[in-house]
Each structure stands twice: as structure tokens, then as C-alpha cells.
Amino acid sequence: MNQQTKRLTALLLVMGTALAGCATQKEKTTSVEGLGKPHVKQVLHLVETSELSSMDSSLVEDSTTLSVLNNVMEGLFRQGKDSQPVPGIAKSYTVSKDRKTYLFKLRDAKWSNGDKVTAHDFEYGWKRTLDPETASQYAYIMYDVKNAKKINEKQLPVEQLGVKAIDDYTLEVQLDNPVPYFLSLTTLAPFMPQNEKVVEEQGKNYGMEANSVVYDGPFKMSEWKHEQSFKLVKNSGYWDKNTVKLDEINFNIAKDNSTAINLYQTGAIDRVSLTAEFVDKYKSDKEFKTAQEGRLIYLKLNNQNPILKNVNARRAIDMGYNKKEITDVLLNNGSTPAYYFVAKNLAFGPDGEDFDDTTGDFNKTNITKAKEYWEKAKQELGKQSIALELLITEDDNNKKISQFLKFELEKNLPGLTVNIKMQPAQPKFALEDNLQYDISLAGWGPDYPDPMTFLDKWVTNNNIAYSNPKYDELITKAKTTLLQDPKLRWEALAEAEEQLLGKDAAISPMYQNGVAYLEKSYVKNVYNHPYGVKNSYKWAYIKK
Image 1 (cartoon, rainbow, N blue to C red):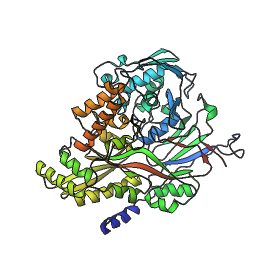
Image 2: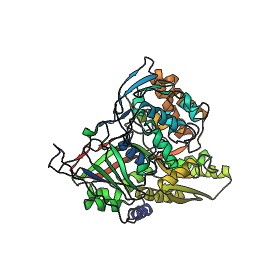
Image 3: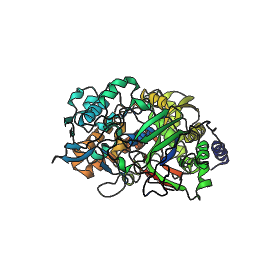
Image 4: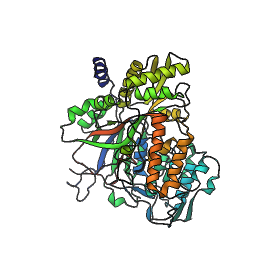
């Protein structure tokens, strides 16, 4: 590391201002047999770094809200302790010989307002998500359901979706093609049921307040003080309520890590993630823990931007900053540089090998080559001075990374100016969805253990304006005709990643996320998931 970079790193590590006035919550006292001392308060105090976007399962797309939604809602299946799908509202199912038709039998479950959860709620919720009028950015995850893609693209009416309530407790689902990971898909937000009566009554307010939604999961949201805090309480109407030990989970929103750590040290919260400057301080602490995630952090490059339409400009940006310095210095939390988009240790092929070992690395940091690509781009564009805006959300890591990127790219790509634009999560997503950005610092967590969870995100009609017919064809084949030939399917997926990154440099992968955190010793059974959602609290409890 050169001296200039060292000075920048030191500057970044002391950036940030503390947030004031985090909310506190009144605790309940519960005696839970077998969990330690009697009358232990079964209350978990946590912190999040950003505001929730929407509790509408059709519209949510950020990882924080998806994780919360997973704990207050339940689909046909949910992620179990080992991240594998376990029965949720579905108590059993059968599947046809061609593995294209599922028949789910539902258990006797209730919404938090006392209404029965029925097969009609699933049919309504799935159709609403895929209805193009809903404008769900996550609808594509449902494209394996019969006619789903055509419906979402306005080629067929929503009534032709392959989901049907046979009766209140029997749901039939037809797929266009057999999908080996379909049960894992049913744990995700777009596949959750929705109470039509409540959705229609609430209208545009649905999902925007704690009381504008009804819940069928282990917890329900009882309070939501926007930009400050929110509270989950045990859902007494949940079908498996006896498994749930926590009475409350209180979340404060603290965008500054030092504020969150102060809350942890004073006992106000029970678990906190650590940014780089705190890892060395606490790594010998008995409460220090680490976990690797499947989540990839990357730069969205708006492919319709006049500058970023140019593939040489995109290659220059992808190769023009030091990813290892981000992971080893700025983060220092177990994150690793990513020269790939499908996460390591997630998906294993028919030969048992990690997908990443099959494809190798793309566009490794090379400042000399980056400069060459940048000069070609400027020549092709007829420009010597270029300004690009970098869109980020308001949290410590994003602030530090964006300052580092600005420094690196302006230093390594002559004539480039990077202007940082900071937005709350929801407005940022709106800007991305409307392609009103140049470059955006983003993250994507895998929904299921298959490369497709990363790769089908970039078929035509996405929020980076990337479109390549060959890429679309490879993904389509991997979803259809090649499902019966795992080896050829794997090869097609590998070729698709090479097209996306090696040939088109459509995005710039930055790092695979690691998490360093502190957790109080009395907190038990909070499960981290490498894919799907971040955490499950259904089995958590406090033991003192």
C-alpha cells in the first residue's frame, strides 16, 4: 500500500458521525421452561443500518426488509436451521412424474387478524406479484411458474398463471419446466400469501405501516417508527407458536457503526456487526464471531448511460480499482475480492466442483490495462473529461467504499470525476429501477443454492439496461431444455457468466461479503443463512 493510499485509508476509518436518540422499548417478562433462570425476559434487541423499504411482499427488494419479512410472514415452506426448506403453511405436497405439477396441502393456519390462511391467499398473492400493474422488481424470481414470464411481460392475462386454489386447503402449482430448487423458491417473499381483503382495503398504504399488513409468520410487526425503530412481537396466532420463545424483537436504526457498538457496550442491543476499524479491537473478545455470506457487493453500471454504453469504459472501471484493498483494509471482516458474480461455496456442479472453480476469475485488477481501456473509451467517445455519479445508501461501509472508489478511479482513469450521491434505501431503489443513475453501489444475496439465482437477474429488462441475445438464450436453455442434462446446463451457466463479465463487463463485482459481529453469550439460536434471507429468529431465545 503506498503512502497516499494509507493516508486515504486512515481518513476513511475516522469518517462518520454518531446518530442521536435511538428509541427504547418496554420489555415483557416471560418464564420459559428449560431456558435458564425463571422470568428471563425473552426480548432480543437488535440494530439495522437502514430504513425498511416496504412490508409488501410483492414490492420488497432489499436484504434488510426481506430478512424482517421472513420472520413475520410464511410461505408454503420456510428456511430451516440449516437453510434447507422445511414445511411452512404447506403441511405436505405431492409432485407429478414430470415434476412440473405440485399439489400442496395446507395446514390450519391464521393471519394475525384471525382470518384463515387459505390457498386462495397464495393464488391472489402470486398473481398480484406477477401482474405488470404491480411493477414488482422481484417478479422474475417466479418465472418458473407456468405462464409467469408472459404474464409479467403483458403477453397473457394474469388469470392464466399456473397457480390454482382447488379448495381452501389445496393449492395446485404448474411449472413450465421442472425446477430442482422449487421448494427453496417457495420460501421467498414473492411466493408468500397475501390477504386480499386487507390489500384492497389499504390500497397504496399497504406495506407502508406496521398496521397496514396482516402477518402469518412467527412474529408480527407491532410498531414502525420510520427512520428510527421497529418492533416485532410474538404472533400468538402462528400455527407453530409453541416453537417460538421470544416475546419481542426490538430493532433500532443506527446508520453509524460506532453508535451501534456503543449501544452494544451499554447493553441496549444484543448483537452488532463490526466495520473494519472495530474488528481488530474486538477480535479476541469472547463474544466476537464471523460468518461468510453468499452476498455479492458490486457496482451496477447503467448500460444505457452515454459513457457506460461503451464496453471499454466499463472494463476500465471494473479493472481500475483495488478490490483487495477494500476487503483487507476498509472492511477487514472476512470479505474476499470478487472477480466473479456467482458466489463461492454456494453451488456445486455434477462433478462436485464449486461453480467458481469451473469459471475462474474475470477482469482482475490491472491498472495498466484499465488505463489502456479508458484511453480507448475516451477516443471512441470523443471526450477527455468525463463525470459520473456514484449512487450509494447511507451507511458506514458505503460511505467509506464510495470515498475509496472516488479516490482510486479518479487517480487511475485520467479525466474522470466521480461525484457521490447518497440516498435513503427506498429512493435509491426507485432511481435504479427508473435507470436514473450512472453507477450504483449495490448488493445481491442468493435466494437458493444454484448459479441461476445470480445469473437470471441480468436477462433483458433489468435495472442496468443490459441486453444481450446470446446471454438471454443461455439462461433460457439452462432454465428449460438443459434441465435434463446437468453437465450441459452447468456449461451453459458458465458461458453466461463469461459473457456477462468477461466479454461485456456489464457490472463490476467488488467483493463477497463476510460478517464480523459481536453477540451476547445469552443469545441462542439466531441462525445465519448463506442464501435466502440473512437471519431467522423463529428458534432464538435468551438464556441467562
